[in-house]
Amino acid sequence: DQQVKQNSPSLSVQEGRISILNCDYTNSMFDYFLWYKKYPAEGPTFLISISSIKDKNEDGRFTVFLNKSAKHLSLHIVPSQPGDSAVYFCAASSNTGNQFYFGTGTSLTVIP
Amino acid sequence: NAGVMQNPRHLVRRRGQEARLRCSPMKGHSHVYWYRQLPEEGLKFMVYLQKENIIDESGMPKERFSAEFPKEGPSILRIQQVVRGDSAAYFCASSPTIGGNQPQHFGDGTRLSIL
Image: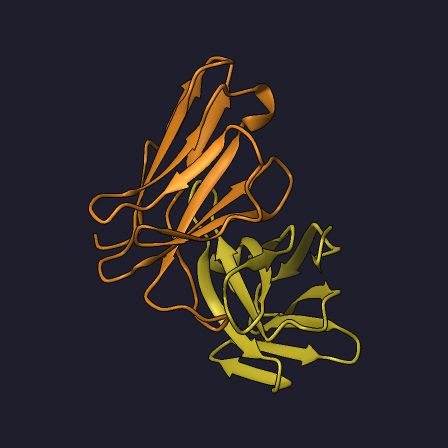
């Protein structure tokens, strides 16, 4: 039962352009959504999060947008840099934080 | 380095043996989560523990798997009588408090290979 889905396994973007990573979820009870970045042979590292009561959160080059009616969120990276090349995971949780549900990841390649 | 420490980084076991995976959370963190990542898949929640207590183990297989987080020492994920399907990367994460908005700090994982 995949409650969080990332339907694009991979994405390639030119350096300097915008990267848009998408995530869909099925459980309308989720309260928080988080994005993690993962390099090979390392653990995920937290990037940015958003509460379900907001529709946008921005941190530097990273912006997350939430569309609750569509149960969809996206991560925008602009401008994209080669160091952004990694696998990006979307995650969701209820307010309690007992469980976090992760998507299958999108592998981003930023081409110099 | 005060990050989440997992050991061993790589573990090879033969079918039927036991595997023990260790996780030392970040200093000051009393909440520990274990995840499993199968090849080509995302991270799947297994269990959430606080010191000496299992809070949520709904993601753990019913048999052969167990976890603990003792008062002293690291959290341990134990897999008994391993099978080929247990081959995966196992990640531990910790956080200082509980809550859905609390980012988790991950270790670099243990890659378990079953021969």
